[in-house]
Length: 235
Ligand SMILES: O=P(O)(O)O[C@H]1O[C@H](CO)[C@@H](O)[C@H]1O
Ligand SMILES: O=c1cc[nH]c(=O)[nH]1
Image 1 (tube, rainbow, N blue to C red):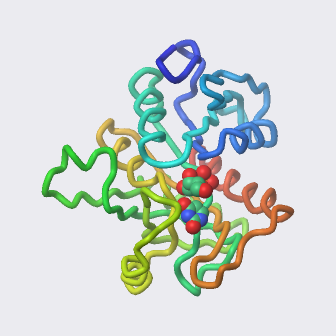
Image 2 (cartoon, rainbow, N blue to C red):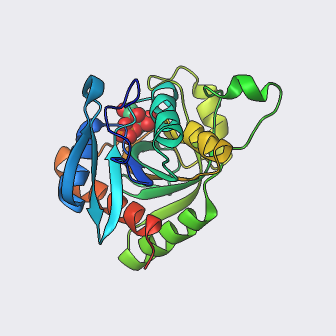
Image 3 (cartoon, rainbow, N blue to C red):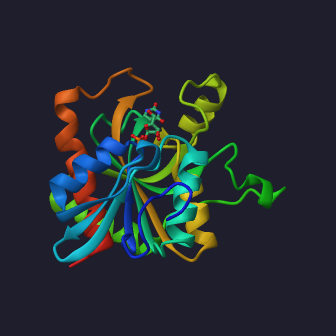
């Protein structure tokens, strides 16, 4: 057990899928895994361990924002030995070529800052995805016929943004979408020699104001989970 995770040693798999929302962790575990066991519920942050096609997987909420994700990912890696960490999140689209319900594979994650910014001091470190996971996810998405974009995203510290000028520059420079966790996940994975990827479903569009209807969310999020599992365990 750690301060924030109630699982016993050995109850967390080496491969962990990380949705921001603990209830998405519950839904994904119940939908995709067999022999599912609830392994954490400290502070209501749900974690489940089960099997996908014979492979042991944990699906654990990260909470919203990089400080929250940092707590869980530090403990998952340092105390439980997690090696492959894949965020399965929602995001807002920032390009007209990206539509609601499309999937984004985050090759890089730009930020203003992360919980790790202090250690980098003047260095603008470029957080990036693990190539083996990214290429396997792109292959699976293509095979499934899911409309998928691979490129840079923005990991923001705020959901209610007050910097339209910054958004304008990101749109201009091809940033595909915005979410709130991937950059710190990539940095922690790099620091601890783990593999990480963020697979994101577009839930809303910053340029058009369009948003995913709740009835459409389950299947859209299902594609994302399937892509993440296939990337972790390519056949
Ligand atoms: O749907 P999740 O995975 O929580 O991701 C996105 O949704 C939350 C904001 O509503 C932030 O955590 C953001 O990154
Ligand atoms: O962080 C997020 C997630 C979804 N949509 C947004 O606009 N921002």
